[in-house]
Length: 264
Image (cartoon, rainbow, N blue to C red):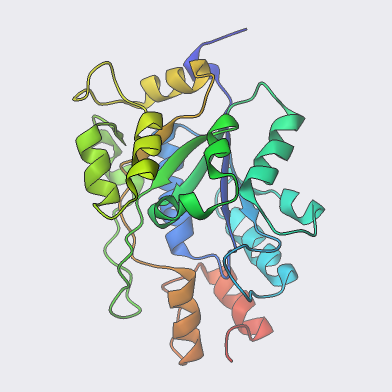
């Protein structure tokens, strides 16, 4: 088997309700794909979300996710969760995908908000038996208005990046904060992908090498830029009659307007 990290094909997945998809999904995912050298990123819309009581009809969320995928050739949609009518437990989805290609490494991308509630997920410790987890830096603070914070295109600052991942225990503790349950913290810390010593950083080549040779899942914190935006923000802006053309791609904004979504 060829272990050349440059030839490794990673199955990268990003799940969500996508209600609606927005620039806070698109831009950080593009940057993460650049940093981690991901040739494909599959977007996984949830069929029956676990933590949300009501979501927009699946046909609209799927259609908008397809529109988001059209904006980057690396993106595609994965409807695995719609093959089941039960609650969309991520562990079941990962097990199903892993069965299709047991030797292909899976990288599951989540936001920091998801990491902080990961212990509430169904069989959450087992996730690391099926995938590596990349944590996208997403602020929990809400934007003051409907203006997007300044965001530098990934291609404009990639040359200045020497290291692309947070890998030390100190960085881990700074990112997750002091409120995390100690047992959860110790478990996640044991999965943190680190260099040979605590101060050593990890770059793209090392990332792919570790992914290729790790039998069990690792936890990665990627150094993407933070974009202060959520689907909740977009829905609230639409509900009060604000223009969201600077929050979502044009094709999705047009779709929302055409189908009169989120106005009630």
